[in-house]
Structures are given as C-alpha cells and as structure tokens.
Image (tube, rainbow, N blue to C red; front, side):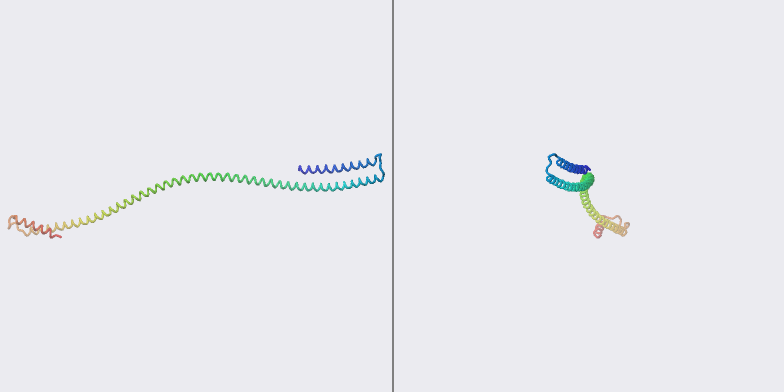
Length: 227
C-alpha cells in the first residue's frame, strides 16, 4: 500500500509539473508578444509558430511521457501485486517450514528420549546378561560336579552290583554246601542207627578198644565216600 501511494504521488507531481511548465511557456509567449520592443510580424509569427510547434511537441512528449508513466504505474502496480502475492506465498512457506521445523524438533526430542530409554534398557539387559552368564557358569560347574558324582556313583553301583553278584554266588555256594552237609549228616545218622541196630549190646558185653577203633574207621570211610 505504501508503494502504491508513493507512485500515485509521483505521478501527480509529474503531471502538475508538466502543466505548470506549459502555462509558464504560454505566459512567456504572451509577455514576449506584448513587449514594447516588438519585432516584425513575420518574425513573430515564425517564432510563435516555432513556439507552438515546440509546445505541440512538448504536449506530445508530455502525452507520451504520461502514457509511459501510466504504463509504468500500471506495471508497477502489477509488479507490486505479484510481489505481494509472492510475499504472501513466501510467508506461507515460511510458516509451513516453521511448523515443519517445530514438528521435527518435537520428533527429535521424542527420539532422544527413546534413545535414552533404549540405552537404559540396554544397560539393564547387559546386567541381566552378565547375571545370567554367571548363573550359567555356576550351573555348568554344578552340572560338572553332578556328572562327576554320577560317574562315581555309577562306578560304585557297578562295584556294588559285582559284589552283589559275588555275594549271590557265595550264598548259592554256601546253600549248596549247607545242603550237602545236611545230607551227609543225615546219611551218617542213618549209618549210625544201622550200626547200633546191628550190634547186640547184651550178648557182646561192653565194647572193647578194638570195636571203638572199628567204628571210627567206618565213620571216616563214610565221610570219604560221601560226594
């Protein structure tokens, strides 16, 4: 608006100056024509005609200048409108850029907060990983100890199984030997009973030393004959 007013004022001043200059020229011509030292009529007419031609030429120049000035003013107004529109567009672009910048700054702040949160979570996860690594190492040591103990227990169990087998064999052998001894005892008891029945204590009287030795030999032979 200020540029438009200034251009209108300049245009009005220029038009007023040209009009004043035309009036002054006419006054000069009139004064010169009415002065006491009048020249010849032909010279005056020629000078008047020259002045008239000059005035006409100046009028034409003034009209041409006026048209040029009017065109310039119109072009100036058009350029002013274009510049005003461009200025408004630039202001809108600047506003949008400011909004985008503010949005980017907000996003940047949020991203920084997220990065800080992720860094804290990473630290916590690293601590958890270190604790888990230590626990896993302890568990591995415990597993190795348990494996060693299991190996020893398996060896002991195997040895106990061998001892159990040996004990079973010894038990079976002892049972067999016991049964054999019981059979031998029963056999000897039967032989002894037969020997007692075959002997007649009333007719023979008390047995002498030879009969005792004979019984002893019979028992020893019987023991050797038992399988």
